[in-house]
Length: 348
Image 1 (cartoon, one colour):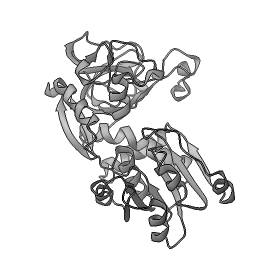
Image 2 (image 1 turned 60 degrees about the vertical axis):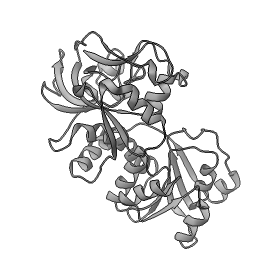
Image 3 (image 1 turned 30 degrees about the horizontal axis):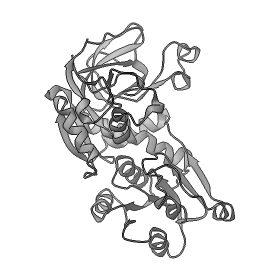
């Protein structure tokens, strides 16, 4: 099969479109013909650049954390999916060898690895994965759309509801509103009956938030985030802040947008990761802060349902053939886009 492979860390030019051995499904595994996989700023580009050394990537490596496609081959003991099924693949892959996996408790696997990071991923014509990570797709959901919404939808559900306890009628401030996780958060919150304020770093990105359902938007580069939000809320803060930047300039401002007993959920640190915390505000206002990742089976099912109904959409910036993975990585690193970049291995 053809794959976008790199044998050393470095700039996008280290990627090579090469022939590698076809994967073969073992017990409990499937091989999927990849129709779409996204390019992510951290999990693909930063990993390839060698700046994410803590993730323990072993070279040579094939990235691609969220492929979608058609089941090509089924290994021994697999009953949940069949050859020909349309599927998206969750990124956290169990080892299939530990006691938890043998008991069928795959989400409790202590040796799980991330697809496209701890093991070869979907930037290839075929990918081998444990069958438990396959999620069947409705026929009306295109593969590019599925790859994009399944990357962020389950986590957004988990942050908003499992961690953030968002309720109908509450107001949520979505930071980084034009990014993949931000757009998922906007749409999922709206579908649950919440009100949304979209915050982003340019007028164009704020406009994207409006396009996807936000009632109000704020450019936190041009405006004082806390003052603008509080003014909009009539002096009372929002119930929940959906944060996925961890920028030392915007994080403290976002925190101060909360009302008494408010909650802040955060996943992501591409803005730096180290921020100032006003502990007096934290305890006087009874604020709760949750840093978390992951998802539940319900989060996954709810994501598929919303996407199948057209209530959860991805913003697709461009689809590249796999042979142009280098250019796709360059575009992702340019920071000029707000949508998802997709690789299509069937296009070359």
